[in-house]
Length: 315
Image 1 (cartoon, helix red, strand yellow):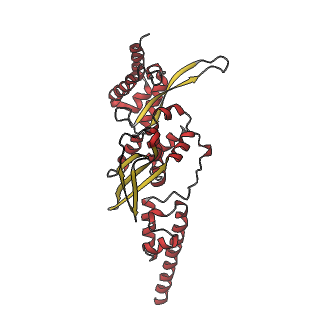
Image 2 (image 1 turned 60 degrees about the horizontal axis):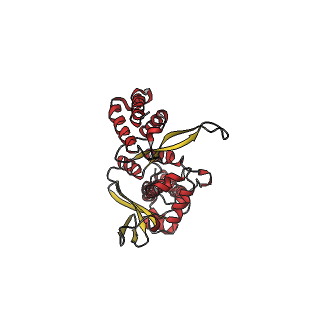
Image 3 (image 1 turned 45 degrees about the horizontal axis):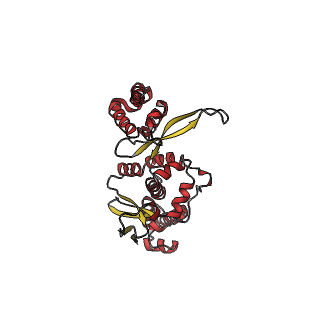
């Protein structure tokens, strides 16, 4: 059976799939064409050849991409990857090749921009000869990156960062999430498929960095949370702490909520930050958010009671 015949079989299965007809609708033909183009690019590569994968696994991977509002095409929001599966026993193995979906860092960027249209996002690796500096002033963060050796390779990586800026209620906010090489390797060590990380280290590292930024700052945005949750399936999560760490800070939305409550309570931003021991709201640990909101709400309720008593006394 020729490679072309295998592609034709996959094409037929995709075109006649009731699952894809339901999720893709009128755009099915165009989407299937982009998927086939991506599959053809891998032909002949023993490690990546998707033409040998079962059509059923490709169909389910395409459906998953649709469910996550991502597209499998040259923009590389997400990727089809080949893996081998034993459907026999240990003594009598029967190996087949299946396709699965993994999310690229561009997929996270695409999803953020779809939800926050004016978001400016930059995710980069930092190499040992680079000059990298982060400056934080209140709700705004800036950075400088000078590539002294633009030809740095994987062995020269010392870490990475994700910078995001956007406006909320007319106010510009920005942050820069930094991740060391040690932390990146800890994430890599939890991956179920090490070969993908070995082949696409920088791509996977960038996806891990931007996912961490999303967890810290966009945890309330469901569409982004869905992508992060799917990506987590690629890792052994049993050793990952689900509770916030002291390094995680509140989101911009949470900062604005505190600010609004502070106005109602008659407490300035500076006073709130001083009590928490930070310079700005975006430095407030997420673990203290509920406590701050509760205390401000108590103050607001107390003011309302005092006002009600004054009105009652004057009536």
